[in-house]
Length: 295
Ligand SMILES: Nc1ncnc2c1ncn2[C@@H]1O[C@H](COP(=O)(O)OP(=O)(O)OP(=O)(O)O)[C@@H](O)[C@H]1O
Image (cartoon, rainbow, N blue to C red; front, side, top):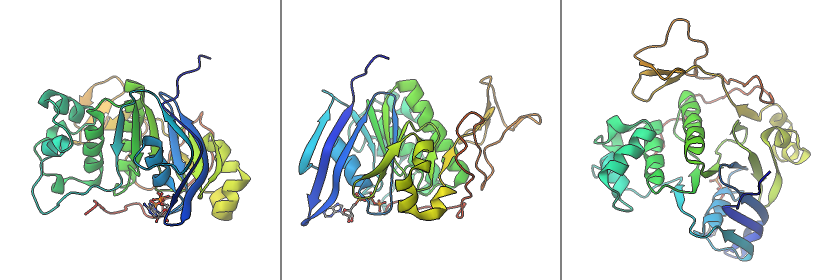
């Protein structure tokens, strides 16, 4: 196999703030086209690790190297926006740089919300808002896309749609993706490498390896054994954000076909790929997580 240049390499990285180590001994790499998911309890250093990887935070020990001219698209967990002022999606896209209109339209199209270009950000659903943030990151044509808790404020079916979109972005652009998961127990199936943090790297590997690792089980207790699920699904049609349905042959209709196979718009169900390692069934306890735009 051809060795590809890593986008980011972290070796023995430690970050110390306010007299304590937030993370220590973090080693990992992200290569083009790779999907890396960081999981770990609250405060375990996921955001710190991601920010250090892209240079938003400085490491106090160890080394971080990035490919020369690395372009990064960052979808933060929170966005400092004055929610009392009206702000259109198109305007949101230009807050951090003046992109040509055609590029903005193209990016919105790519994430399935072209029809919302002039909508007010305040009125978007959680899933639409995440898509707008993704489009905003994608206009930079990043080599590396960082998504900090991309499915927060999104209900279950929206989560699957977003994971699908993330996979499409990876497949289409070949960018590397660093995903921070809010959910300890679920990672998207296309994840190549899961890194489980708890102030240090507790365990790592392909999702099905991590699910079985003694360190993961120890960190998350016996319950974890039955709950690390890998999102995956066979589907022959996709529900577009505007309510229409796109079929495997590329056609778009207003509704599902009666003989359509698998839907993935049923809240509360996980679907497993026949050929993916079926780690365990996992039921979401909070099918709808509500809408938490950062305010
Ligand atoms: N600049 C800073 N100075 C001091 N402490 C910080 C700083 N940034 C983060 N921390 C602390 O470091 C720890 C790790 O934070 P971090 O945001 O990386 O965790 P996380 O795993 O992303 O958490 P969550 O799941 O809650 O988002 C937390 O205890 C946080 O309060």
